[in-house]
Structure formats: C-alpha cells, structure tokens
Length: 97
Image 1 (cartoon, rainbow, N blue to C red):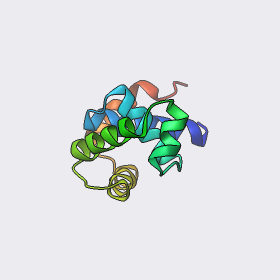
Image 2 (image 1 turned 135 degrees about the vertical axis):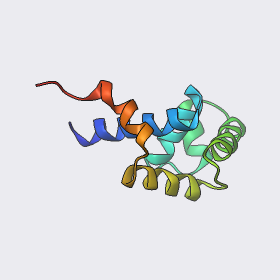
Image 3 (image 1 turned 90 degrees about the vertical axis):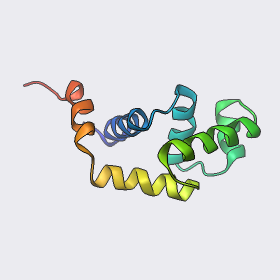
Image 4 (image 1 turned 180 degrees about the vertical axis):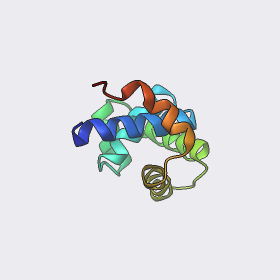
C-alpha cells in the first residue's frame, strides 16, 4: 500500500471512531494535509470560513480536545497506538494473497 492509501485509511478509521460527519471528515483531512488556517480550508472546500470554524468546533468536541493542535495530537496518538476497534475497521482493507 502506498503512503497516501495508508493515510486515507487511518484518517477514515479515526473519523469513524469519533463519529465525524462527511463534511467534518473533509475539514479534518484538509487539516491533516497541512491546511491549518480556516480560510485555506474554506477556499479548498468552497464553503465559508464561519462554516469551517463550526465544523472545527464540532471536531474538537467529538475528539474531546480544544484546538487544532490537540486534534492533530490525538490523530498522531491514534496512528501510533491504534485502539482494538481500529483493527476491526481495518479488516475489509487487508489485501488477500
């Protein structure tokens, strides 16, 4: 698997585990790809900065953190020490043979 595929699977697992909506996932993926400013994310997703900030607040609440740095720290912790539930989510993605 290439690095982009692994990152996509990991971000999807993290999003499912925390109950992110589809649009929250889009904001989250932009954040982990290095777009840290709300106006950059808004421009990429073609939504308002206010909407991005609302999604970020929701992400923080669902991931039980209070900032972008905290959300990214939780994601890195998840990658380094995935919970047992993540293994169950990963099963459909394993290559056969």
